[in-house]
Image (cartoon, rainbow, N blue to C red; front, side, top):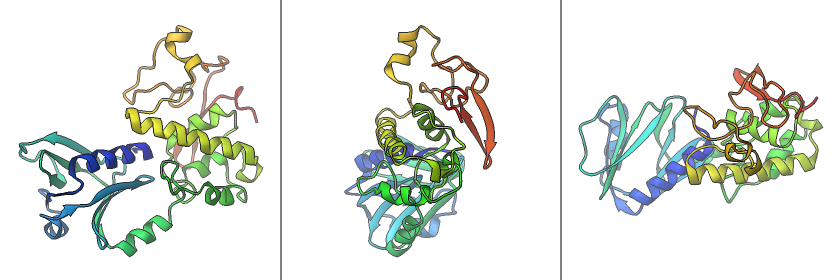
Length: 269
């Protein structure tokens, strides 16, 4: 599932390509046709993201909410438009570009109140200027749940996924099964600040890189990571491979239906 930086990057692209102009909105697949007809020819005022949710604002009570889920994708191209390929839930055509949305978990037209209610259920997003990390800390500091599980709970923290979860805990030497209430306030402050920086970098470059400069392949002489997701990481999807710092095999386990990765030596219990 795309992590929060992907949605913020999409919001920026859609703002640049479509915001402030009248757009054509359609639904070649048909599942969004009724809502698309209400929006067709309207001005797309702005796009924004909160966590893993994307919002296209056409007016106070005309907001398209998109959640990509596991399989959703947008594809952007320059005009002219091409015939739809696959199941295109929503198509937006602007002055110079067009985009197709395929396979989302959600693509729906909401009112302002409905969007406010949805966002109220989400935790603070490290990529938003209005984020309040105290809200997340208030829940974490009272919880017996592991910090690894809490970081993936979108009600606690919005936008963090499996990669950022594993990597930020490694970078600060925090055992993933540490109960939230046992986490020191100083550790939480470091986690939050690191997520703000790492995820902002993800927005800029379009991939997740978490390895510090002194541990990069060109410095250490190791082979670069070979993975379809790209990016240099410490532990994510490196089960049984040697830790880049100490050489200990990276451990893995299932936690709440997701794979967890950590170094038993660098993140001791």
